[in-house]
Image 1 (cartoon, rainbow, N blue to C red):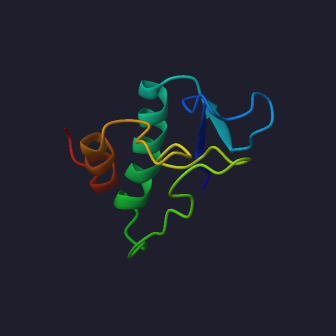
Image 2: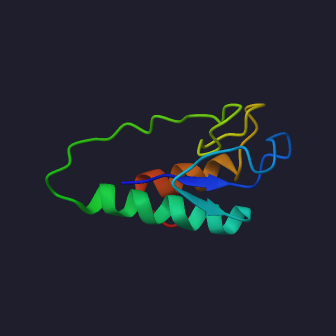
Length: 87
């Protein structure tokens, strides 16, 4: 399964970042994250998961937080999407 790269970190160098796919705004990023975690939460044979890119780095922009640790979307929305519950 892939993670969504975002264009939400203004500090990231344009054209020099990497991710599995690209989301152009917060709503698209949240929908991609929600879709990924929906599969994780609804797959019976999964007992857990590890999201390995907590925050963006200089080169990879597929974290839940920007490189400065500011949330890409409100934390309440990340939490709801992670638990696969409506907000």
